[in-house]
Image 1 (tube, helix red, strand yellow):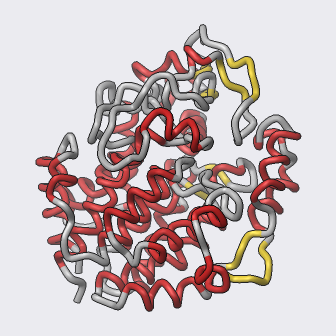
Image 2 (cartoon, one colour):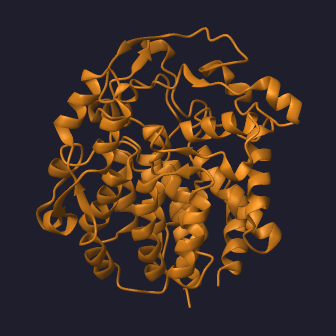
Length: 407
């Protein structure tokens, strides 16, 4: 049977890591991160400006006429609409310069709003709150029901006042664009083959949490992959879940964490295009979104014959972070980094979480996965980190109710 305490701690790890990382989300240049935060060792507000933010002007173009005809909600931006280029507002901010590791256009510094602008210390991002939407749906029904989750998901995203976080990942915007056009909710997910960033860490998190409901990883992986397809049609996400679902399940059954990590590292191939070569490609094309689809597919899916276990024994922050694995949103880079941080810190909960936070990039989504794994390997989560969460009391009730349903 799964250990109840470890189930609870895995979920605490997810929410704590998300909130710890939130202020430094998408800081690629670590000099900027150190300037704004020093070394992260707790909760902070989201600062303004964010030196590398390119959220302003991101597109969202639902078919408003069709949505109204079908009686479907299309407004998922609400009070955050000023940051987006959409079919139902006039954007007054403009992106004018290329900069940063990502090579994307950004507005002038004063208008580089943080992706999580307005969130306070200990507050969770939309990604973590959508985990809570899933958990509440399961608690309400006593089990996972796909249609009920989709109904709750649509309601949460389309109801004014539910979401305080301005940052809506591209998968959400594409999903609701498809929904506005009349596609069935089960078929609204965008494909990684069409949009490179669909193959991102964000697609791993909810399915991984959902797998915790089931006693065996055999069952858990099946339901995780099915749930993944609702929002992320991505082979990279599926591959990551194929590794992480059994890993997490074994930890929750009390398996030795170090042995699990070493066994898993043997299964993780190293991506071919990385480091300076990847960064140069982004800049040459003035942002990854401009790289041709066929070339971008190869960037994300071509692996070498070398595996992670071969480089872990001699790995250091200098050799692993950015130089070997990008800190962006890709699982083929993020999963090895997660395993590296756990290996480096021998699964110590706080050291692993803070190392990930201080590595920047997509530390939030990468961190929620790491939080699940490191929490599942520890008998004690620091109370001050639990109680430092802005919605601690409500999250505690949700965790307790969810864990009772885990078989």
